[in-house]
Image (tube, rainbow, N blue to C red; front, top):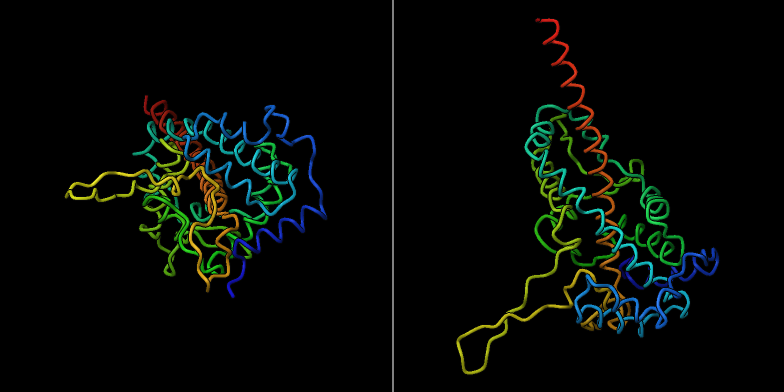
Length: 303
């Protein structure tokens, strides 16, 4: 039986929540008169079908009503806040993409890059609490999901990501108990792993959007008595839908009717990517400022 699956997340979260409690002031139940259901429909970035999927998922939640509503409220709150930060990454990439790639490949040494791509597991949930004000039951969920992501190979679940850049990043992401989450940029001979670097650069570019999380491509359906195909929206693939497991497998450990934490795992990996992007942006700008300072000093001495 696979370990760290979604059923484990459900049980572990409930245990931690009951024993540790939550911050009542952070609940979102009072946001709209209709509670969580109205709040979901009030999120303008969710398409109608995706919002309906969120509402339907509420009915299958295994948690008490107050815990369930707090989880869904803060789940949407976190996405909303993260979407507001996307222009920062888009602007940086537009202004510095070429110079950044050159700096990564030749300006920065491998050890500098290796230090950038380290994130302790506890740092993920600390950023959720401190940067986004998530202290309720959803913080307990994310803390548990972080552990699930760290042990993702043991779950035997399929890849969570959508789109090439996110998929490659998920597959390149590794967890080491001593160093936390990391990317293996340094090869055994001490040289830079340019393949992993390119995966990261593509992922960093995607942080600026246009979507917080990519959707699956539309499905094709064949029209009867016609060779034409029509596109059909794949709302199950909506990155913003928490959703339910759609297919039952009698040999699968995870129940088909239970909640899926796929979207939460994707958010965790996105938080990790943003943390590294912030570190890289800071190091790059510092290096650029230092180089400009040295160039100016050289010009003054020459004159």
